[in-house]
Image (cartoon, rainbow, N blue to C red; front, side):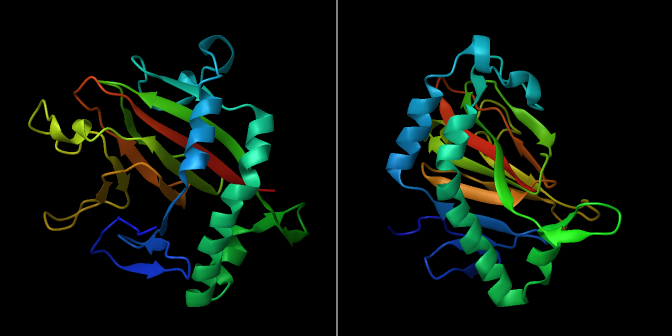
Length: 228
């Protein structure tokens, strides 16, 4: 499958065609998941209920009009091996390019005051977001070592209807790093998503999702990896 995502920022390309983007210092791993996996995410998400699985209070933003639901543990364990294959490709390319120091530090776990060991990457939490008109997430970070987002449904209309002058990034995901210390120095990296796009990034990196202004539904799945 041809990788449709085009960018002028520095990037590394893995043997399987994934991009590791360097718009600033932290890397962003960019790949695609297959349609069957997206279907599984949506089908499982449709089984979740507001009474038992509501995740809105755990989010930084406002999902008043749509919704957010935490996946069940058994489903997270089921799909964990599939997602970890992408993390392995991410780490392998970083190691090939820069050696194993960065990944080694990420995987380092202190078990007590005197002992350290190499930890294991695990999928910790995962939730599905049904973003509707006016829903948004302000700048925020996640817990854990790495975070990710998978875009399952992305209506093109959300990028076309701009209700107010400062909403040119409606429906995008915006990564934020560092300070805007000069008019020519930007600290925001906007990405216009498409269905199947899979992004992995450091969990402590700020990111945000602006509102959009049309009667559509954007479905994404997000989650966190931890080292244990």
